[in-house]
Every structure is written in C-alpha cells, then in structure tokens.
Length: 283
Image 1 (cartoon, helix red, strand yellow):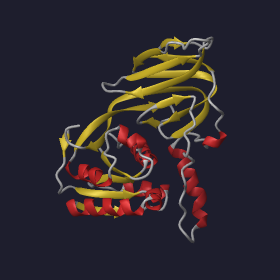
Image 2 (cartoon, helix red, strand yellow):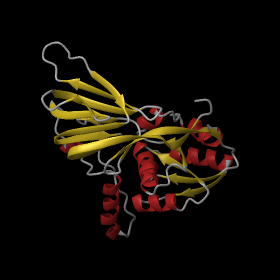
Image 3 (tube, one colour):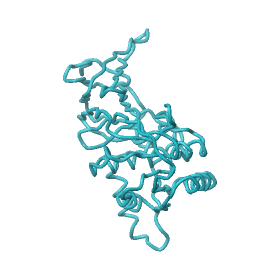
Image 4 (cartoon, one colour):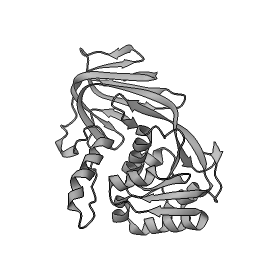
C-alpha cells in the first residue's frame, strides 16, 4: 500500500447533506485536514457542482466529507470518466456511513481525518454491472427495506429554481432507475436464474428468498442464494466467481444504499483492485 505525507495537496469536497446533518463534525474535519495539509475546500450545492469539483481536482487528492451516498457518487463519477484507477479517494464520514465503515474508514471524525493525512492507500475490488453501475459493498435481491433511508435529497441554491430539473436528472444518472423505498414491494419469494461464471447455480424452477453478492479480494465475488424454505430452513447455496448474471421477471436490487430496477436481466463483473481508498496505516 502507498502511504501519504501530510504535505499532500487535498481537495476537500463537503457534501451538502453532511453540512445539513452535522455541521459541527464537518467543521472539525475541515479544521483537522486544513491544519495537516494544504487543503482546497469546496462546498457544492448539488450533484452538478459536486461533479464539477471532482473533475477539476488536478493533482489534488480528493477527500469526501459526507455519507455513503456521497462516497458512491464519487466512485461512480470517476468510474464513468475512466479515472477511477488512478485516483486515491479518501473520506471523512458524516451521516449514514455503515458502508464506509465496513470498508475500513474510521467512524470518528478526528480519527477519519487523521487517517486521510497519515493513512495508506488500499486497493479494493469493485462490482460493475452492464449498465455501468457500481457496487462497493454488497448487492441484495430483492432489496430489503432499510428503516429511515429515503431518496437522496437534492439541494437547490436559493434564487435558482430552474436548476432543480438539472440536479434531479444528474442524480438519476448516478444510479440506474433508483426507486424510493416506499414504492418497493415487500420482499418475497422470486423465481430467478443465477449464473456464476456461466454456470447455473439456481434456475427459474426453484423459488428463492434472497440472493446476495459481495466483492471480495483477488477479483472474486461471493454469492449466496437462499432457496425458499418449506418447513425446515433450507441450506443456502454458496458460490464464487468473477461474473454473476441474474435473470428473472422484473426484479429489483439494492446496490449499497440505492435501490434499482425493475430489470429482467443484469450482469455484474468483478474488477480487481479497481479503486483506492485511504485507510489507517496497517489495515
């Protein structure tokens, strides 16, 4: 892993949702980063300005202060610009950050900011689907509702209401066909064909309760299929491989924090060491 010196130049992008959720944590993170490195701070008001700031980072190392959605947004933008492999991202979590913490980002504001300054770059695998969507942490079919999670808010600067349509359009492009959780049917048995590296793991004649896909290390994803149980609990079917294809009738799926679909076919491919995240040294 590559380590960083505190003399690095940073581009600190503060997500608007983080400023609304916990302004004090944002201030602390900004102070720690500015004290330890040369930091340019950006305060985007919406997805368009967020994307513009990231695209104009130059040689500065980008640091996202925000929640899991902000992290996924940054990875998605860099992936679609084909700039992800050469950009080491860093994050200070503010808000709902279960995904970031599962990847190794410290939960505390000061600890996370110190990791940005003194940490090390860790290469991570990525799931990429055939619509150019990405999965950092976990994929679930059908998408189990998560209490308290709502569609991502879109901030519109005062005096510029005409930008509202533009911002909402950009949000839609970052995750294919996102769905508000209130509109997602309750999870239930589904008939799906799941293929791993071209081999059928479960076919349409076997109803399943859930399918989960998680990128691991070494360019391989772990796949767990839970067949519908009648009486005694059914034994999960486990598999691993580089490519996972799911076919079914109008199924939805959760990729990290976003719900997408319905689709009838989707293929995910593991990209080994596709992106970098700065984590505490030694992890």
